[in-house]
Image (tube, rainbow over all chains, first blue to last red; front, side, top):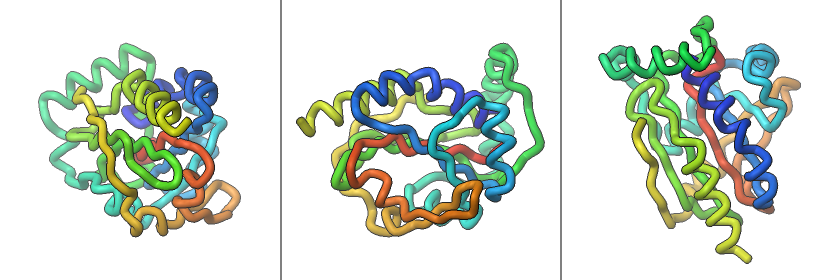
Length: 140
Length: 48
């Protein structure tokens, strides 16, 4: 549910990000055959890729630990996600893998990063959009 | 929910060289995605 919630939150900022000359690229740990279903659940029509090897997650410095899915804080995150209408689906990927966000500007500089500490600890979408807009304007 | 933070560092070359796959089976080198424009690279845990 947290993955769906995160993508929907970002989708709501896509016009602002496109307006700043940027793009949102989503990577998931499930195999490519699960992408179509994820698009249907989230309404995401933009770039969406699969990396079941988790190589890109490791390279991005993201966390991988099952305990990060089962803390009292996760329960609060779950209530939040359910209240927003995001239901828990069957896990389609690596359940231990945690997420994160990098904002990257050409030719290859990271200008913002968020490493999820727990499942459901999604990067604040407005913060992400602000970082891309700032990074984009700094290039001009 | 925790906040992220501003950064100013090069993308690790190993990340730029990672390949990911779309629903049609086409692979792409991640580094090609930010060559021309800024991107939000969002890693979700899985597709559930």
